[in-house]
Image 1 (cartoon, rainbow, N blue to C red):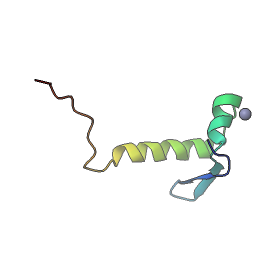
Image 2 (tube, protein in one colour; image 1 turned 120 degrees about the vertical axis):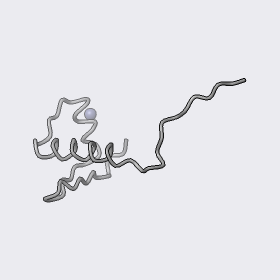
Image 3 (cartoon, rainbow, N blue to C red; image 1 turned 180 degrees about the horizontal axis):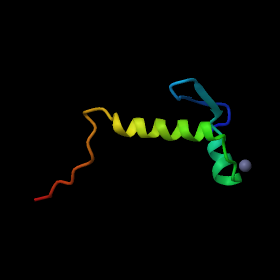
Image 4 (cartoon, rainbow, N blue to C red; image 1 turned 45 degrees about the vertical axis):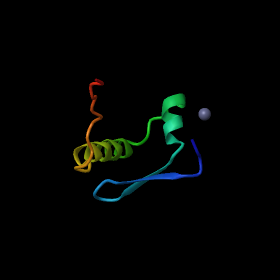
Length: 65
Ligand SMILES: [Zn+2]
């Protein structure tokens, strides 16, 4: 993972910004981001889940003959 990028999340009120390395800090160093960042990230993930493009569909298994 690159350390030079930034994650920008629009929490509706403002943009919450963090280095992309924040994922490494959280996973490997038990860093806990500010509550506002956690909430914004969770909302963004939830928003993405609920607004998948209509064309998105889970893979379909097709029986081989
Ligand atoms: Zn490290």
